Image (cartoon, rainbow, N blue to C red; front, side):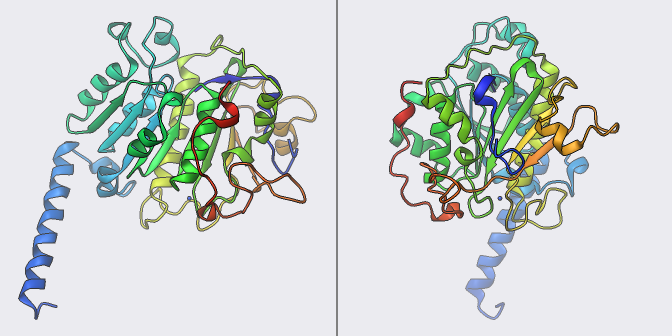
Length: 348
């Protein structure tokens, strides 16, 4: 998760424009299927030792079968660790190594220094869940070919773009559209005063990630360079964002279930898919800022609050057509994504 400032902070929204027993063979098949499912459930219960505390909150069988792909595991290391507690399949992509500065802002330890982040994370998740199917890809996401990308996301249930690279997130949006996968994107703003989450769920959210943050794309197209580092950011902001991300991921994965705490959060249509989290009371205090307009300087609102912004699919006459989704308003109908390479963002 990276930090950004300047014009890249702008996000467009509605306020600022700124997801038969009679046949013996069938009877035997049904019984066999039941026994196999029963064995899987018992395996899952043994796998986490005791799932009684999360019973009713999540569908344990669904989570055991879910495949999650994460791009960028710096700040997201804690998110991955927690997902491993309720998930059976985790694929991570990162090329970086752990350095000493990561100990204060991320979730790594001294004995991780110098190791590949994928290796360090692998040891952590295996210590939490020894049976997890963990796959590490030690590579720059932007250097992967379309064929390699296809193999990695095939069968994935959700894609998480936690990378600190704008071009990688831009490519990630195209990948999510091409392969019709729910996806989540996250960044932290300057000084960690606030964070941003965007998410797409084909068939539910009308606008894609690019529609949500089109001013950022425009800024990069004009030569904007992100020079914001992690100064003044602590591990507590990282944990706060990761917790929100984890809850969102569970809600997206449970969108087609009933009876669980994370079931059907978004219904059949949800257009507020850009979330800004305020983590410092100094953020958004200007008279014309989004937080001031939304909360009207209420004495009951201070910090740790959020604004869920309405995102439209960008299309004429109000906007130029979104270059990624075309602004069609139904992401399941996007059929013109013919490549997932860096394209016009190759040099960024």
